[in-house]
Structures are given as structure tokens and as C-alpha cells.
Image (cartoon, rainbow, N blue to C red):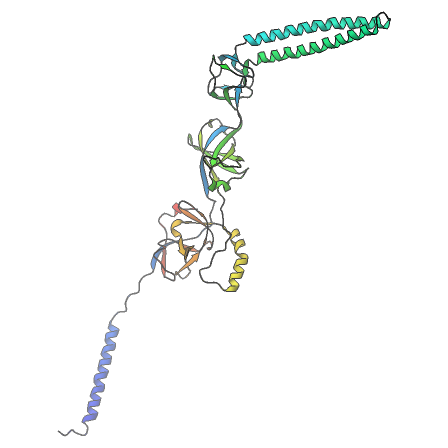
Length: 405
């Protein structure tokens, strides 16, 4: 078959037309398809970091006690025949609260008085004798030896009279010791002997709590011992008197732990206790607990240069020591390798992982001493579902007051 001379150019034009039509159709199809939708930013709960308004509070159970409490006991032995004070009675200084049988004490006192009378008579006789002998000696009517005997008898009688006088005074005191008196104003907190009982000298009969100063006794565990300083103030509340608080000042902290409980006993003086505060009441003591801030510098989220590392090592301790704490919920804490970290929302709404220094772990919060600044937005929830550089949308927590600092 023989082709016409212009058949080849016609075929080329037809092929070009078909190709152009295919390209136009492809472009039209591409334009007609919609672009795939982009994923919306992930919503995260984040709040701007704020400085802690107050330091953490430690609360411990305590008990109300009198600052001074002494046992009341007889200074002589005997049989109790009367007790005029009972448990819980308020007594005044000098008030008689118990009596011993005075029979034996009265006889001792009478015997001592009789000996004193005899010694006084001997002294009077010796005085008359020595006075007479001195007058006769001046006239040389007696020998010097007789005057010396008179002087010696007088000195002996005088000493015996003085001794008998002291014995009589002691016997009178012992007779008065048969009456047990309160030595201070106070309240009877214990009865330790009964009427009719024979007691020895010094055996306790009552326990007297002095009126006036009142102490709050608290046993402090080792974990919060650093929070106590002599002179520090604390807030005391009583379950028996709801709605009221009192101020107390730390007066004494035991230098060693109790061998059984391993706690340190602290005594706080209650300021202006008032009539509502009764001895033996249970109490709660709340005091500000200082932050144990670490002196190690906070590691940055990106590897530092050698010069930056040197500068950080030189100033890291002072920077952390001067940092003011920021309280965050425990749910905000993440990790970077084996170091604690938090997610920080940058101004462009992307996430960055930041290492932090933890000053204290609380029951529901953590106190951060370094690594973040006030005003930076910190992710509170969902820290295990986000990644670095991810675009997020910040939403507010439902109950921020639960983690208020």
C-alpha cells in the first residue's frame, strides 16, 4: 500500500493533539480533587506557672499539757487520815489538801519542847553562877580555876540550849509537815494515795499541774524535723473547739530521738490560751515547712556547649538557691532520661520538654525550685500522650483550685 506524502505529518499532529488532551484532562482531574485535611492541634490542659504563695504546711497531732507539773508528797512518813482535794479540783497556793495522823508528830514536838525547857533552865543556872564567880574573882575571893569551871559550864549550857532550840524547831516543822499543802496555784491531775494508807516521806499523793503557762506537746518525725526552730510560731487547732485557732511558739526541741518511736519531742508555748483550752485535750499543730532545695543546677533541654556548661557549673548552685518555688500538680511531672521534666508550651503553641529541679514531693503536688519561670505555660494533664515540637491547643483545667499553691 502506498502512503500519501502528507500522511506522516498528519499522524504527528494527531498524536500531539491526543497528548495535549490527556494532559489537560489530567490537570482538570487534579484540580477537581480536594487537598487532604490537616490534623487539628492536640488539646492539652496547661496553665501559666505561678510562684508559690506560701510554703508547704506540716500538720501533726499534739496534746495540751501544763508547762510545770509536780508531785505533791509529805515530807515525813505517816498514815493519811484525810484528803480534802479530789481529781480535777483547782487549788490555791498554801491550801491544805491532805493530813497525816498527828499523834506521833505531836509527841515528838512535845518532847523537843521539854528538852528545850530543860536546856533553858540549865543555861539560866549557869548564867547566874558565872556572873557570881566573875564578881568574886575581881575581889580575889575565889581561885581562878573555879572561875574557869563556871565559864566552861556556862558555854556548855548555852550550846545545849541552842541545840535543843533547833531540835524543837525541827519537831515543830515536822508536825506542820503532817499537813500537805499545795505549793502553787493549779489543778489536781492525778491521785496516787488513798485515805488510810501509810506513806513514806516523798511518796507522791497528788499530781499538781500549775496554773499559768500551757504547753503543746508534739512528737515530730525525722522527715519534718528541719521545719522546727526554737522561737518559730505555729498554729494550733483543737478538735473540741472547732472554728478557732491559737498561736504557739516553739520553746524546746529534744536533741535526741525517742528510742522506741524514733520521733523528737517538741514543746510549744501556747500564747493566750483562754478558758476553752483544757489540759489533756488533743490538738493539731500546723507550721510552715521550709523547702529543701537542691543545690545542683538544672539541666537544659538541649545539649549545651562547653562554654555554657562551664558557666552553668559556676552559677548553677546560686541560681537554684535564689530561685523561688513553683507548685505544680503531680500529673505535670514527666521525665527526660532519668531526670524529672515538664512540658512547656512555647509562644508558637508547640511543645518543648524541660528538665526541672524538684524541691519537695507532696501528696498531690510537686514543688519546683528551678528549670521553669513564672508565666511559662506548663502542661498539667496528658503529659504521656504528647511529643516534642507538636502543635497543641491550650485549654484550662476544670478544677484548678484543687492544685492551688
